[in-house]
Image (cartoon, chains in turn green, yellow):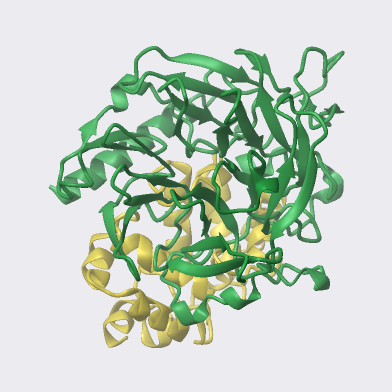
Length: 407
Length: 163
């Protein structure tokens, strides 16, 4: 049974890719991460940073190196979740954590002074997307959508397979998901461009929303290269999302974006226009940035801006109310590292006057200008008491950030 | 480790057709592959049987051990100048050395290719090209789209003879 399951996944993945590659009469495209690399950079040895797929012992997580503003403190809340990234909280308080390559979804149970971790499902193709609504856990892999009804009470529940309803396109690159239910009860799902830079096929470089059963699909944003983090503004309900800038246009950009969707169907520029109006080096057209919605804020060159969270809790000082936290997993496509932190952004609901301040740092020894890092903060979750959970995909750790005037 | 050596050769230098040398591979690469086999995300029945039930700690220990063994090319016959030149040209065109490094010793999650068994290199690259090894990541699967059998054979011929 288990073996058959594995084979069906691999066969499905292979079928999808074979479909894409079968046009033998056309020259093969360069590999996705390599596209757009200019001749001047052809000897560059920059390559995506490696993740880690084995458990990191608690003693090897240097939490004491994490820096926070005065009054804040951090603890290791859960660990032993290799590859753990996006988090969703169940109605009864269990936390579900998605992964990419290791293919698992974890469940964390909070037993008060300690947490226990179990694997809900494994052997999926990058099940990065997790969301929770009405007692059900939704898991979205690159090529599958599963719903676990009542899982918090019934740990062995078999999933309902919703894959056919969601009509996921076949390309894998940049098509691992971040998923989230909006205030309209719809499920928001990004479909990244399957390349570094390309004229993407029509199903990609967009954000969609669906009814929870996969019906009623609607494309709500276009020209989005690769968004893997978003939240909804606590007052306006508008979607705010990060988007990763393209690679191989130099160390300084184009920068990652923080965007605000103020109208359904807005175009955010990919592949012609990046950041605050940077025309693409490879895909050119007249008036490249005409009718393109510009970002609220630039998040830094190659920063890998990931999780976005509007803070609505009451634990942190009042100045943090309705501000944004953004996790920046950190660059690989620039000579010196950038990111590897969580920043706070004070900004109006209209997106005006953003002010970015470092919040959680210390995951990298930045002074050396070398890739001397130990952690890569990826996603954020606000707990009912107002504490902030921060996942570190590198060590498979969930940190809890809290505030007290006694600190 | 005796179990590993039985197929992968003494000290991880393979004398077995179709079975790769694992000596001198980057530690993280070895860890990742062992996890992928254990999780069933990379399919190889003998490897699945071998790693079934291993803990992460045991995997790390095995990876440490074989990463520290000296890599040695196995006898693969004399080099054919034409093949070597074709292999070098194709490697340059595909920028293989960007990630695998110019001397092909690999790094971190990226495997050593220098001195790997020629038969294994050919079979691996064919598997990538033909989407039989999509496995864990989306990267190598696309690196060999469109490669001809002749290019792959020449590249393997060249890499297998590097030290």
